[in-house]
Picture 1 (tube, rainbow, N blue to C red):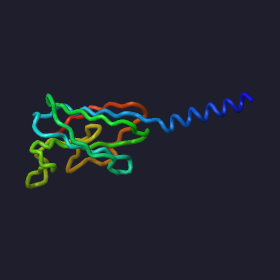
Picture 2 (tube, rainbow, N blue to C red; picture 1 turned 90 degrees about the horizontal axis):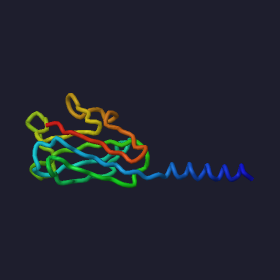
Picture 3 (spheres, rainbow, N blue to C red; picture 1 turned 90 degrees about the vertical axis):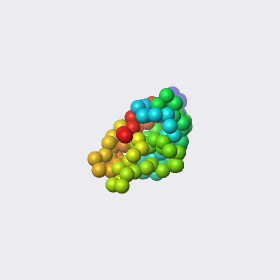
Length: 134
């Protein structure tokens, strides 16, 4: 009888862990001004866009909060849309003229860094801090 209750309890604990929902807070600091918005995308590990968000900048910072995320690997990219046109501006050779960044604060050499370097894991409530490249 005790074995059955132990098995039932174990299954309940495992099912609660596999269906756990966590939060993700993203703080972007080091913005050069309070103009415009931050445009942000969150991806799953298969490069599917889970959400696109926009948030105002206050005191050269921007905060995003996401709830009910399953455990797993995620990635983020964003840009500082200073002129509010919804597009990341670039110069004639394609270099961004507005601030931008990726999760893990990775920087690419000629273009975006490899997607695998953006990935971070959520195993519980998570907070990440990011700084853009200008």
